[in-house]
Image 1 (cartoon, helix red, strand yellow):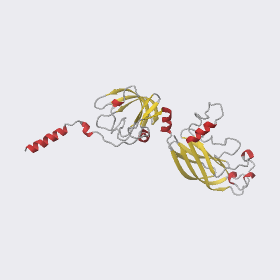
Image 2 (cartoon, rainbow, N blue to C red):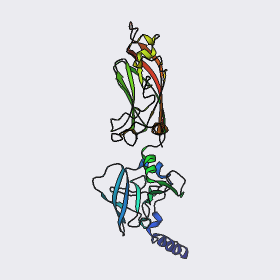
Image 3 (cartoon, helix red, strand yellow):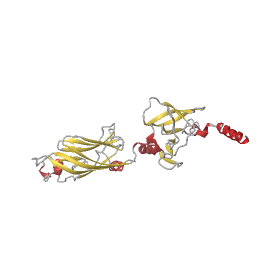
Image 4 (cartoon, helix red, strand yellow):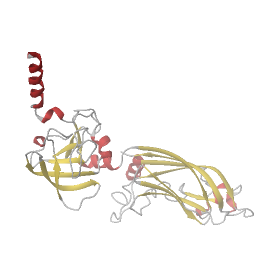
Length: 314
C-alpha cells in the first residue's frame, strides 16, 4: 500500500512540472544562408516593443524586405513560450536591428508569423555589419558588411549544366540559379546569347569582350560555321576572325546598374569588365548543326544542338 501511495505522489509531481517539460526540441538546421531558403519571409527590421505573457510577441518595424511579400511596414512576431520552437525575445531588445527569416520549419503551428530556433534564423545588424552564423557553424559569430551580405543572399554560388536544341527562328529559354534566364534570341542567320535577371529586360551578358572590331562570341551566325566564311560579304568588320564552336561569355546583375548604367556617362572600364567576369561565366558549345541548304555565302542555321555551362555567384 505504501508503495502504491509513493508511486501516486511521483505521478502527481510529474503532472505539476511546468510546461517546459513539453518544450520543442529540434536539430540545428544550419546557418542563416542555408535555413533562410525554407522561410516564407525574410526582412531587415528594428524591434519596436515587447509583449510578454502567455503568448509573447514582439513588434517589428520592417526596414527592408529581402524575400517574400508584406503589405505593411509593421509586423508582430510570435516568440518563445517554452512550448514551441522559438527563441526567447529577451535576446532581441527594443531598438536593435535584425535580419529575420520568418515562419521557418518548426517555428509554430497554426497561423501568424513566428521565428524558429531550429537553425540560425536571425542575424544582428550593427554599425553597417551583419553579425551571426551567416554561413558557418553553430554558435559561430561571423561579421560581414550589409552590402556584401545582400549579394550573398540574393546571388549565392551556382554551377549549372544543360543541353538543348533550337530551330531557326525559334527562341530557347531556361531559368537558372533561381533568378536568372539563359536565352538564345533569334537573329536572321542564327541566335544571340542573352542572360537576364527575372523581372528585368537588361542583357547582363552584353559586356562580353571583344566589344569592337571583331565578331562577339555571343552572336551565333551561319557564316561562322560555313566552309568558306569569307564568302559572306555582310559579315561584320570584314574580318578574317571566325568565332569557334565554343562560345564563352560573362554576365553580372550589376550590368545596367552600378556597371554601365543609364546615368554613367562614360565608357565601361577594364576593371568593370573584370568585375562582371568575377560574378558570372558561361560557355556554349555548338555540338551539332545544319546550315541552310543551297546557300553558300551567308547561310542561316537550320537547327543547332548545344551544351551550356553557367557558373558564378558571390
